[in-house]
Length: 137
Image (cartoon, rainbow, N blue to C red):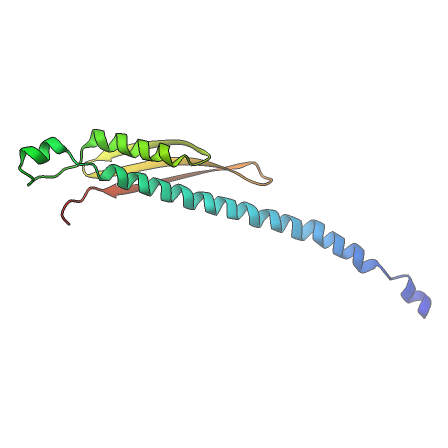
């Protein structure tokens, strides 16, 4: 009887190594890659929102002054310059391109972020954020 038990010693060690190699290592890589994508998505969203708000804070000074302070509107040229400068100043690593669109009182920025993953290469995230010019509200 003792002889049969002696042959099975160490088998759990082989099984543990297989479980580690084929289950836990890929699961760890998946968790790390998912965290990289989530943090990139959050960073992209916050950067775009801040830049859109910066752009939407510009006022057309000529209109404001000519109306004696009664009319305040968004200056589209200045809004584009400020939003673009704000997104450049953020210097987000992996931000490959962005576009600034102005419609009426709304500034919309769309950006593309390339996130380098641990094993699977890269993921490209695209997001848009908007802000509206509001005065005295």
